Image 1 (spheres, one colour):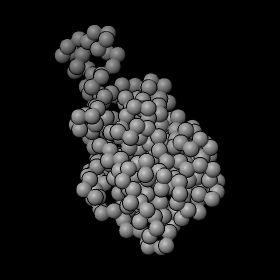
Image 2 (cartoon, rainbow, N blue to C red):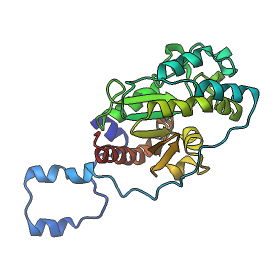
Image 3 (cartoon, rainbow, N blue to C red):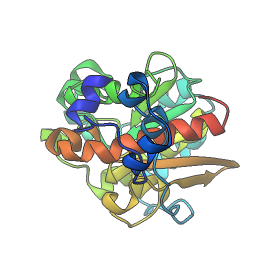
Image 4 (tube, rainbow, N blue to C red):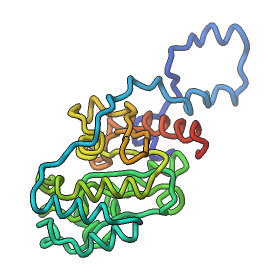
Length: 266
């Protein structure tokens, strides 16, 4: 946790509001321990920005493949059934070039569900999401607030097969996978969603704001009788390219931890 914080540039204990240290020193002398760190400033996130607008789930264009995907996904009544249906589904061309179906990792009853964009090379080889460099960073991020894919975090992607060359998925590929990943959310029914990057933010929350504007602003996924708070943040792969953004993501993680406490699951 400390290594991740230092890598993110958080090498000083700062609070969200300015503090007159001279006045504090005059009011009451501090002991050595009190000078070391202000735990409240470290553990309390900054004020959460205005929430994202609530919009209905986007209606995908109807093609033979999307119509088939809708019918198949709707018939699934469990996560196991959904995975089996994806194993049989041949409507997405990505399946022909990928080695593995990359469905999910983590306990089915985990309160937090994290959704990324698509598998990469390492994920395709192992058949598990977020196992490469970005996945290792994600694990450290989660551990910093008491989460783990082994106990209380469930991880998946919008796309279930690796796009060739790790290219971004096309709009057609997302439309074909949409009935499955939306059904995935409904069957999983987590307490909180964390959307990693622009693609899941756009297609889960149906908003056009870019990830830099949406990041850190709570939205809601409302469909089929469920209402789940959803927090957009940067994808770990972006943090590997832009380490300075780790400061912002740390605030998002603190807000996530606070939300879990409010819901009685953290």
